[in-house]
Amino acid sequence: MRCVLILICLFALVACGAAQAPATPDPTAGGKRLYTMWCIACHAVQADAPGGAGPNLAGVATRAAANPDGLSAAAWLRRELVNPNAVLTQGYRPGFMPTSYGQTLRPDQLDALVAYMLTLQ
Image 1 (spheres, helix red, strand yellow):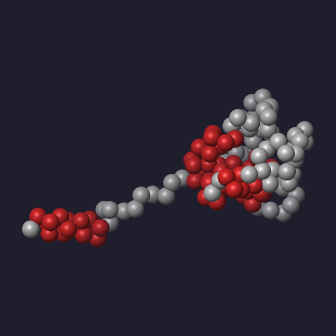
Image 2: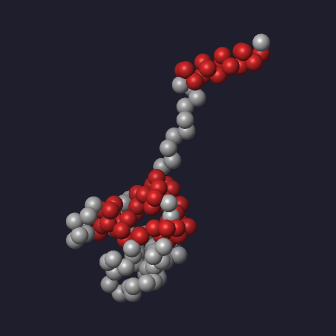
């Protein structure tokens, strides 16, 4: 009898929507975590930060939106992550940034990293 009552309560909770699936994680927050894990050692995001091993990413969303290749800002940033030698920032040499992020990171992780970078106006 007790099992029947538990099943009825569970069914009622599901039917009323009280047992909803957890919310989808914020891709921007996930991208910021990935930036902290993979990128922060070489790329600053504060406009007044000193130069690092890689270009400063402050304003990268604005630069990506104005790219000369006709790509959306998101598509341009994704390409730069998986093929960092496609367009080199002046003063930086090819081959320094790893070219394996397209294989190392899952597509949803790349999307999250791009989402975070799009916040860097």
